[in-house]
Image (cartoon, rainbow, N blue to C red; front, side, top):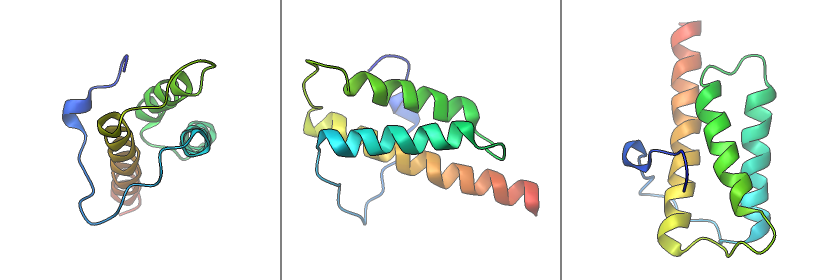
Length: 93
């Protein structure tokens, strides 16, 4: 994956991975796009980076991610959600 530093991503141990399907990747890209468009987003650069990586996976002829890659993608999205919530709470608190 180009541009995303996977070493800083956390995993979410308690929750199972959603199935690795094109529609799941597209849904994650849509979510990242909504965060980018939201005026209240605190971690916009991180969402932009995630969005660009997810869009790469939706390209024509690109094979679906391997289980390890899919696990990393899901962990990255979950970590971004959690960090966004923390950033918003810090500003509000």
